[in-house]
Structures are given as structure tokens and as C-alpha cells.
Image 1: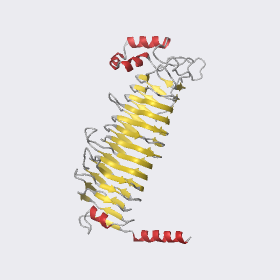
Image 2: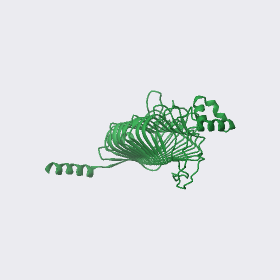
Image 3: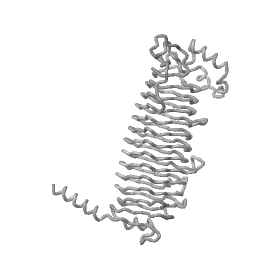
Image 4: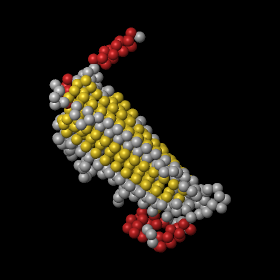
Length: 412
């Protein structure tokens, strides 16, 4: 009990002694660097309205770094702006512009190294290489930030929020555009990404690599090189997201590679070249998703086993399903297919004859992409009908035994 009382007393004394350090042209402290040098744990550094041309700033104390409206930190494209090497810090309401770029160094507006229990919020980052770069850290919150850049190639651009080797991170309500990847996770676990808007990025709106037990929901990934890539990960939950207008010769709403034991539900895939592209994916449940006006709704490559597709809407896609194997170990059940032409004599809402979602033409396009120019021709209708009557090239057992007659899901 005496030890607890002593700890509380020391914390109270520290709180009482904490001070606010103001930085401005007319203040006694005129630079952020000087303020950080004299600050102590628990202090607040208030950056008042003005332009501060500074970079290479080191934060190694548990402080609150806060900007007034109109305070701008200009890195003059020289290098990194802030490097944080402390626990229990907060960065709030800063505007940082013109981060330096390099082909060998990941310069960022804010770099966090081996930190615990921190918040980065309400900041604006413009013309950055990397926006927020976090390494070997845990228990962090990144929220309400706007991160943008204007790079023209992947090689010369960085990511908006980049987390490497993280645990228990929360990333939400951020807007990201014009970057390589909007959000990038590598070796990150037990983390959540939600309510973010990631648009017009050169590669992916969100990119997961070797990151297990994570969740992302209620995000929108629009008009990126590709929407989201989840690779070499397991136990991922992806729900209530919008994958829209990710359109191009090699573009996806969602790219899955070597994924195991995932839940994908209540998502909208709208007007993507490929809604979902899966390769080496096992034990994934797709439920209550809407695939609307995509080129391909789903493309399944090799080594995809024990996946279940149920209660999904496949509506007005050029091709609902591409499949490159004659062997099927996946289940399609109770989905709605706008291309289904069967009947429902007993009026129970379920088609009386099965639906085969893999068309022969889809198989041909997989082998010879140039054949796509024939998509709307009478020839395609004839070969699809012949394969439907007597399957030879497509999996004989790949069908939806109980197709729904009406759309199942509302718009996300």
C-alpha cells in the first residue's frame, strides 16, 4: 500500500509540474527544435500560427505536441520531419508539408520507433513521401488524419500509414490519396482499420503482408491501382467495406494470396476489373456480399480449397466466376445470380434447377485473354449453352444447387 501511495504521489507531482511551452516568432521559444530540447515528460508543446521550416526533429520525451490552426511545418523536401522515440506521447492538429524523398531511405512526416501507448490525430500531411511510419510499436491510435501526395510512380512514392511489426494498433477516420499504398501493414497483429477513405493511390488502398488476427471494416477503397491486397495472412475479418472503381488491366477490388481462415461479409464490390481475385486461399467464408457491375465478380486460381460462398448477390457482372481447374472443393449455396434463367414453380424463393456460374467463355478468356473482344457475340452464347448442357472444360460439380430468385442484400 505504501508503494502504491508513493507512485500516485510521484504521478501527481509530475502532473502538477507539467507546463505548456509556446512556440512562435514573437515567443521566447522560436523554434520547435528548441522547445523539444527543453521540454520534459508530461509537457505540452504548443506550436502557434506560422510557418516553421524545420526537419530532423527528435522527440524522446512523453509530450503532447499540438498545433494551432494555421501552424505549418515545412520540411523543404530535405528529409524526415519528426522521429519519435518515446512512449505515451500525443501529436495533434499539426500540418506538415514537403517531406524529403529518397530511393534508399524511407523519409516520413512522422516516424515512430519502439513506442507504446500513443496517439496521432487530427493532422494534415501534404506532399509527403511516407506520411506516418511506425516500427516495432504497440498500443497506438491513428485517427482523423488527412494524408496526400502527388507522386507519379510507385518507385518514387511511399505509403500514407505504414506499420511494420506492430501490435494492437487502431487506424480509423483517416483520408488517404495520391500515395503508393494508402495503408500498409507488415507483421502487424491484433489491430483494426475502420472508417477510412483511401482513394486514387498508385498501388493499393490497403495492403496487408504477414499480418494475422486483424480486422478492417466500414472503409471505402475507390479508384486505386487496386483496392486491397491481403497476402500471407490468417484470421482476417473483412466486412462492411466498399471496393469501388478499381479499374485497370491488372486491377482488383480485393486481391487474396495465401490467406487462411478469413471472414469476408457484407462488402460491396462495384465496378472493379475483378471483384475478388483469390490464389492459394483456404477456409474463407464469403457471405452477404454484393458483386455489382464488375468485369469478373470472382477469379479463383489454384490451391483454393474449402471456401464457402453463401447469400451473396452477383448482379450484372460481365463474368460472375472464373475458375482455372476442373476440380472443385468450394461450395456455392443460396446466392442470387442476375444471369440465372431458371424458374421457381413452388414459389419458395429458390430456383428449381441449379445454376452453373462458370461459363465456357470465362474458361477461354483465362487461356486466351484476347478472346474477350467476343464477349457480346452470338458465338459466345452458343458455346456457353453447349457447356451448360454437357460440361467438359468447367468443373462438373461447381454449381449453386439453391439459387435465390431475388436479390438478398441491401446496398452497403
